[in-house]
Length: 223
Image (tube, rainbow, N blue to C red; front, side, top):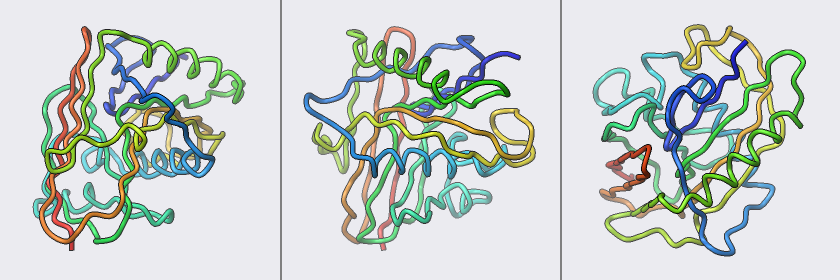
């Protein structure tokens, strides 16, 4: 069985290395707590729980146009609001409503290793750790995350890994695996933002490298 590699924003779905990867850099001194690692697992559980056709990782959407209400729903038990990446390098725009005074959590780029039968958590880390090291040190990569045109400080962009967690995939899921429970490990470069004030806000993630580029814009009405 081919190794399934899933990256999200940039999110890029691929089998093995059949498509280019998204790269990134982390600010000097940026570290992640164990709580961030738990959020990584929760984010992946949220991101992949909806089937293809209404999954938040797919393309542009507006919550006023079905199934945008489902795609914009980033609420979860962590108390933070999750925002999704994209499954392609095409520019995407998303218009959603967000609750006031609620922290936001989303990836700059990330990756998940879904274990096939006989594989272990160590197998996952043996793949993900070198992958992260290589992309974080790629000199060709540039990134910029902004909120209302202002750059997000590097201290809010951290590298974080999850522990082994259970991923529940629906029928017709985005990764093409059987419906049911799978074990997985996630990694990536992540942003945590404080709650935004009431009103209109724009979050933009812009990334480019020699092999991959992505441009994602969220237009949020906070209320």
